[in-house]
Amino acid sequence: MPQTSTTETAGEGKLGRFFDDASAILGEANISRDHQSGALKGPHGQYSYGDPYSPTEDHQPSGAVRPSSVKEVQNVVRLANKHRVALWTISRGKNLGYGGSAPVVKGTVVLDLQRMNKVVEINEEYGYAIVEPGVSFFDLYEEIQQLGLNLWPSVPAIGWGSVLGNTLDRGFGYTPNGEHSQFQCGMEVVLPNGELLRTGSGAMEDNKTFPLYKGGFGPSVDGLFYQSNLGIVTKLGIHITPAPQAYATIEIDVPREEDLVPLVGTLSDLMRRSIILNSPSIANIFRIALTSNLPEVQANLAKYMRPGSCVPYVVLEEIRVQNEWGFWRAYFSLYGSVELLPALLKTTQRAFNTIAGVQIRWKEHRGVEGQYIRASEIGQEEIPHNGIPTLAPLGIVNTRVSEDGGAHTCFSPILPPSGRELYEWYLGAKQRTLEAKFDFFADFHVFPRYIIGIELMIYKLPEEKAAMDLYEELLQDAARQGYMGYRIHVKFMDKVSGKLNFNQSALPRFLATLKNALDPNGIVSPGKSGIWSSSSSSKTSKEGIYAIKYY
Ligand code: ADP
Image 1 (cartoon, rainbow, N blue to C red):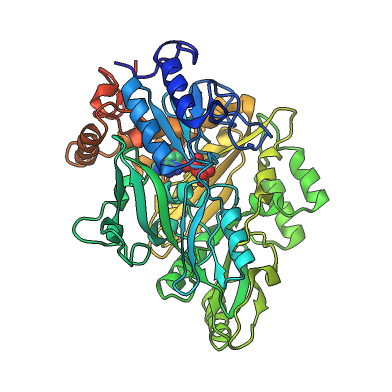
Image 2 (cartoon, rainbow, N blue to C red):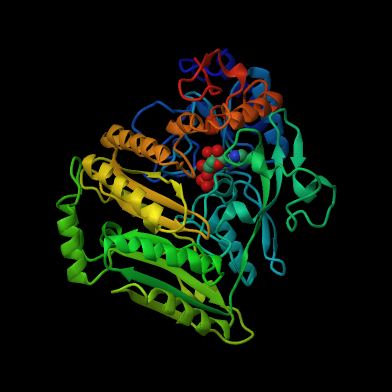
């Protein structure tokens, strides 16, 4: 049976009774009986829940509850079970480009953890923090500044999301500890029946290594709560990069489109050898031009960047040649001691000088022996390699010309790191994108053993259908080539889980077994990552054999 009805309103039936009971626990100010208010301020200045980048109601929640403590989360979960009302967990709801705070199932109530915003602990000596869900990257950074600690916490491109939610959705940032899911250590989780669990060393009361040693005793279960609906994470330990003594930011331009191959191959090789420690990002000529802040370049792009049109590559090539830019630009930094930095720079230059026409620029902070650099001495960076949070890239979504609201989504396949596979995938994806009359904005991220090839699509709200059609084509193309996204828009979760077909979908079947055991009433984030409990419905989705939907 459906647990939430798309027609039921908050005043009626079980939903109304759920909100009445939730109000008695949390106070009326901390529940929203519709989707229109109560969320943190969004990219269009709105306070509504849902996907700010979708004009449709397909994934509109029916309201929200905002507990302020673990006890309240447990009580809300018990109420949800009692009334058979489904909850969609968010920490700050800034999952922009992948659905924002929108649930998979229309009518789900958002469980918004923004009020649980304590930094529980920061340890400078060992380099870690323990945070609650509502702690943003700005909050953590500011707390570290106030305490004057020698730590550079990682931050993604936009700093208003939560450390915990970003980590659980496998987001990443730009310092050497930027691969957040790899540097998470210790979790506290409210299970769908309301019980409280700690993972790893935290399984032992008062264990001294909860945020230090992830393994614990026996099987590791942290991974079960990533991109998941098997629990609600209420605390998370995260390791933080110590402030370096010496630091340099690097930009590398290469002139030809096909230079992507040696650029990526060299970057990932230097990462495997621990010369480069943070994840380099790579921009294409369209993005270099768009973010250049040169008025004449902006005016040139604006002639083409409008619904139903995209910038021709002859124009981009003219801009590129006039400004002496590369077709591709890689951004990364080097971190080390005073003695180490000159050697790292020399090694890096030698490696990239093998590419004809390469330009290597760097800004050095040589540092002083025995002292650590404060990120604030360096100041805000275009890409936050020093961990200073920013909201600056938000403006990019409004660069397509028209009165309508700006939006973006990301298609983000994971590929091997030689550069060859990325280039092959990129040529096909670029072709698809131009045929659909959108611009290809590259935000590729290099890791030692894989690439996250983010294609950021900028669109206007009335173009949502065309953008989503393109998204689906890209998804199907990538799957045919043997790739899947690292993070998926709520609209496509069943589609991707339907591709997990090894041994008759053994993994989706395993996850469905866990879901049924842990959440028999299907109250936590139904449909997240294509995972459904059998109680959710009687009807099987077309995409995944074990993905079961509400009807
Ligand atoms: P952010 O806080 O970075 O803005 P969200 O709150 O939108 O990100 O969370 C992103 C995704 O991560 C959510 O859609 C949800 O699937 C998952 N998530 C967020 N917070 C939690 C949590 N406390 N427990 C379990 N999953 C969570």
